[in-house]
Image (cartoon, rainbow, N blue to C red; front, side, top):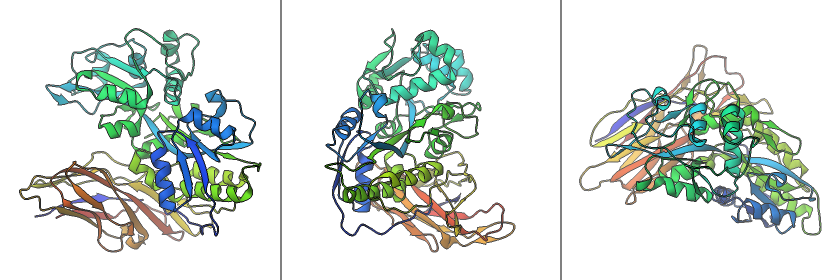
Length: 504
């Protein structure tokens, strides 16, 4: 038995440079949230890099003391209150959404699909709105049965970059509400204490509180990776255009295009918070790779060359792996700026890469019922036009399949295989060969007993395997990063292709 579905896709070809002839080991420290991502970069590129996830403050302190060669941090030294005299640059190297994750049940079933405007969200976290059946929430969620229970806002008890970003957003888009709650506060890294707020330490602390069965009615702000790992539903947040947008990678990437970057690499998020562009998620943030820009007694040019090559891999090939850990590929403008900034590292000799472009094409699905069930996450993906490589040789764009869910309830657990076959991309004036498309299969999550192997990264010139389950009983969620490159001679126009996914 098999089930098929069809998806219209478009998708970044990432550049590569030769490995260093004599690699030198470099070490770093910093963000715990980014630790898994740094490990993926280290392993994926075969780089001799060590990293200690000791926290942002300790990582920046070790960097300033020249105990490590680099730091990974959501904050700059001044924002973290750490004096610095070491010559450095801040290179945005990864991105992630800050989401509003919540725990609501109605009749014993989890409530999903919640939408909140910036006004309503700010009222919740300032104590001005205290019940889930409030008319303001109901008006933003027509047709959604809201429980008649109190709202339990959960905030960070410790100083954090997440609080800094969230309060900065509220202060930027709802200044009257925020200032009424905390006069003169503005953006801050520690959340004000107030009656009705539950305060927990760390991202893992607020996440674990909300996920408890007895914490129904609770809601928190937290990095998307934590919410995904905990299986918590996330709010579709209102942007300045009045749209409710889910914290998907493409929407976060599109929103961060509006960020302003200073000469030292630091980012001003004000334009992101207030961006009126359609389809943007308004609450994203970057992780900085903090790098030296001068040699010293411990950091020479050989060490700088090794660090620069690792950083180049993270900015180029390494962006695709971020989706696996809940991160967002960098917008194209930040990839270009990041690669250019690596030239300030002593001994650096890196070339550029073709940056990932935010998605703009629409994905549609057909879902068939049966014992082996397959469905695709609802909603479209909006992609901008492909971008041209620096040498003018090719146009590239990228995106990601909407999440594919496979549920296998068949007796005997026979396993299953999911494959895809793509047609050529056709338009009114021309054609793009399907061999110019490629995918990177990703298993987002699986049941504890399932044994699933991702397919290979491959072009789609012929039918390809996305995943194989040798033990498939239960439910798994999968996706794939999609890359498309086309000759610059391709005539202008809209191009589409049909990708048939078959589960057997």
